Length: 318
Image: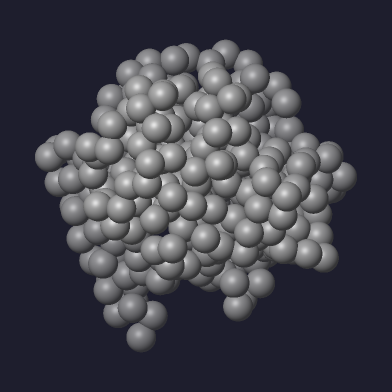
């Protein structure tokens, strides 16, 4: 994929502006492909949660605002990217200002926030397309005709043809380490909650899930740094030291027991943590992203605007 490709997604309730947005995009970018995606009705909310992850807590409210029907995807190439600082919900970030500014212009055109989505960099583009179409997304895009229709649920909801496809899909998410042990897979990741959303998993609190692969299942164990399942620096160190991962599998059950009860520290686990320079002094955290006071105020303001626009539309439709 070209290093400066981006994704614009027009949700169903913004279709009244679809042609206007497409015309404007053509004036600034190279349109590589446009197509529609329709999710199954029974899995729409799961798909929406898989796409946005922990960024959206109330998917029912979001679905009501963006529309529970097919949506339009525009895959563009920017021949002249301009990287600048912009204020986002994650704080000040370096993004392609041409893409970012267009997204907010289109959101203004469509009556408020969130009815138009866009990726902001190469990593987010790969993430969005992997969630929507799977790790082989370029093959599916190339096979689709211009303005064609793709009827599919998100990749994590559908399951995976092989364990390698699962690994390839996780490559588009934040940094992670995958450890295999027969029919068991352990994933150490920056944000467990985002992967649980992607895979359509319930947060059971046990860290263990069933992963659908082909005609069978794997026992999947998820541990996230953002949630405090791992001590600070653990993910970085185990990424660089394969032997640390092999040794971790030997004490994994002891480690999971420790996460459930911080007083239960076995001798093998104590030796393992000491060998690699980690203590047991770390706390569980909120899985949702931390925000500054300004960012939190902006999100609350957006939520109020959400509700106002929905209320206004309900009166207009009566």
